[in-house]
Image 1 (cartoon, rainbow, N blue to C red):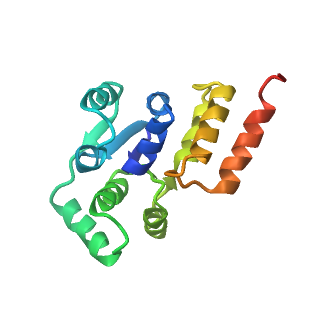
Image 2: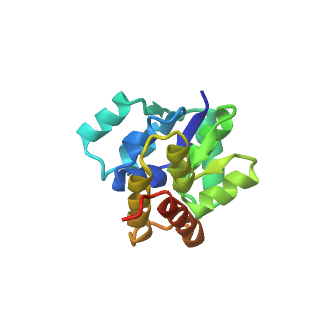
Image 3: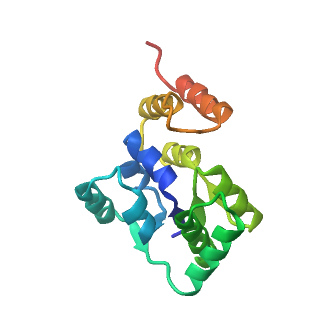
Amino acid sequence: MRMLISDTNCMIHLHRVDLLVNALRLPYKFVMPFSLFMDEWLSISLPEKDMLLELGLELQPVSGNLVDRASHYYYQHAELKLNDCFALVLSQEIENSILLSGDSKLRKVAESEGVTVHGVLWIVDELEAHGLVPHQELHDKLLLLQNDDRVYLPEDEISKRIRRLAQCLPDP
């Protein structure tokens, strides 16, 4: 099973619109660096975190050589947070994994290092492709994301998906 190594950004956005539980049902293994889960995901209550772990979210410690590599990225790219660098080095370390990130700076560095990177909109596409969420619900969740001032997604891409999903909806 292919692994998705996630930063907090995507997980928070998915949680914000109640798509995270469905995302964890996708045929991927979701992994987060332990420190991101504990230190950055403060908007998620402890019972919710426990539930996510029960649903299959895995935590991966970052130690030794990986901490050194993450520190190197952190000092080389001042715009990155150290925890984001932990997600980057895990995605490099775990063969055939995908980095799940909405942070444009992290995505740029990861892609320059040859790491496959996807974000929230890709997860929405996967939820649709696997039939895990009805079109109406995906449409409504994308509208919520589009109108949320705390969420930065490519306007053209989110609009394209909203229009496409609207065509799948029954006429009122």
